Length: 197
Image: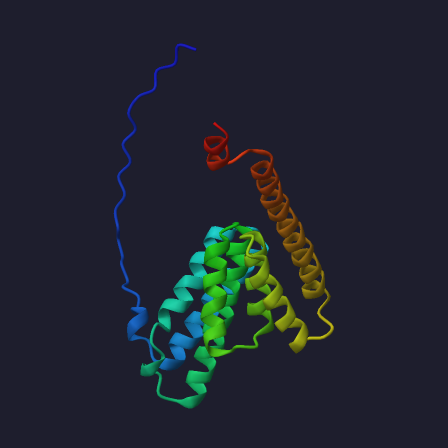
């Protein structure tokens, strides 16, 4: 009580500055190494529950490989494609946790463009579709996962849940349609009222 808060001035002097090499000027192997490190940092952040920071790391790793055309070696292209795929799948996992299901679906679709039978991408897209109440699409993806990986218990459980949700949704719509039809049957039409008058 009664203490006065004054203005505090802090002066800092930058004594040394070293400009780091720009990512775009990295060699092919340096870019792969940097992106791998960024992905691994993102994975550690994801496991620690720091989802927004993990997402940013995955995006930074992906930005390094915006265009794979400038990677010359076949081995480098394969490594970059695998790293890109892993980052997109990890982005989808983060988006699912953040409940941004449309973005999760989009990240999975990027992977599925190149690898149509990727089980993780199919399953994560199915999870997103379920939350978006796109039950038919969820069922389709779960069935594809089960075709590729017969032992996948999570996909089978999600398939059953999606089928039950679709049935419930269909039943609800049918009841509403039937109720509307019954209401219409109980009322005389305008033509009948005019004819009787």
